Length: 454
Ligand SMILES: Cc1cc2nc3c(=O)[nH]c(=O)nc-3n(C[C@H](O)[C@H](O)[C@H](O)COP(=O)(O)OP(=O)(O)OC[C@H]3O[C@@H](n4cnc5c(N)ncnc54)[C@H](O)[C@@H]3O)c2cc1C
Image 1 (cartoon, rainbow, N blue to C red):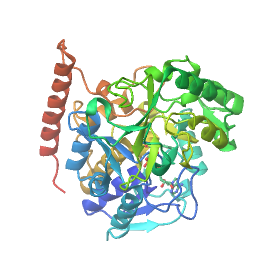
Image 2: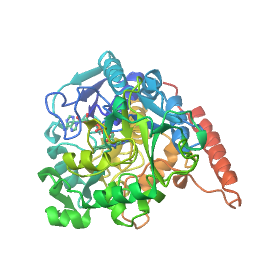
Image 3: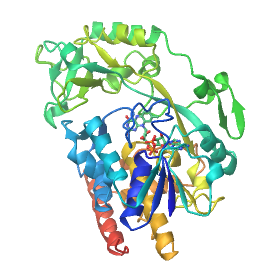
Image 4: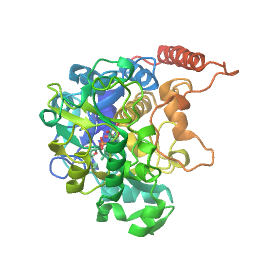
């Protein structure tokens, strides 16, 4: 029997991987009786924010990771593909149908027992345990991790984009087009001219922001407790999740060159590229809801309505969800985890998902699969599983989690930069990428060819 804590992206994959190899699993999930500040449903693997699982182009790092996961039997990917909604190159899903299907698959597996309770560390026993409690793990889990990992427990922010009703978008202004016409016309674009852009940026920067919640304001870092003030000093935003008002504060044109860059777009009303463009992506199959791409923020809800209604095309927008801010918890993996995701100081306890220091639904799910494989091998043959080779995307994520270079360890998505460079490096970027993909595919095939069959 293996204990898995949390039925999020990593937990369901770990449980599924173990059960698929004939191992009994007891899966603890506290929802719906107790919830987190971000989850709102009873579904396992709930998509707490975007409904996108990122690119499925096989020649991108995210697509490469997906192909490796699929080959390893990923439940998340198989279910996502069944409940896919239009999203251009991205694998976007109908969040309700996806969550319901994952939950049904797990609940009906004969080797998985679901316990609807909060797991606390006093339950640790002799069975192998996989902690996949996510970036919003409960207090007892976070505190215990902080204790056993020494001074390595951090908190910081993630920010979420708002969602609007499709019918409230002014289609005489917002136009359907993907950048460079790649990936269909699933995206809508709200085109700014210089004047409307500058007015929007001024309003954004001046708007009132949400104060920190108590649960976010306090934290432990490097062994010290700190309050709200300290948090603001120490908090680190991810590039991908930095609130747009913080980006806008860096310079008037920073959004026009970043989140709202207009490249590859032509406004049919003017026949020209807009000054800047806010993109909207469908949130469901029926395309009745659209989320504001890369518009995560921490403004007060009333302020969000006022400021985003200044965007051309959104003057009458009806908001069904506002941007919010959340805590993110992760451990300093290079110092505290083995490559099999086992806590160095507490043998037989494994950590999976975002808690390990990867970032994203898919990456978290991937680290759930890896924890499941590593524990399976331990249980079935008392051995350590052969590690995924460095050139693979699994190997690259693990290399991030094991990289001992002196640095401020921060969560990471799969990206080109994680895949190893050819030596010598060809001049053309396309050749470098082609090398990385080919090396990853060859290494993955060799690795899985040598794996014990399930
Ligand atoms: C607000 C927010 C928005 C995010 N938005 C995105 C996004 O748009 N795109 C993206 O790719 N990633 C996003 N992420 C990052 C991350 O990919 C997701 O949080 C992902 O769900 C992490 O997977 P996980 O399995 O590690 O944790 P989760 O999916 O959060 O799963 C953890 C599970 O453990 C349960 N749990 C927690 N503590 C206990 C306990 N003690 N006992 C029993 N059960 C417990 C929780 O209820 C939850 O079901 C976001 C994160 C946050 C916090």
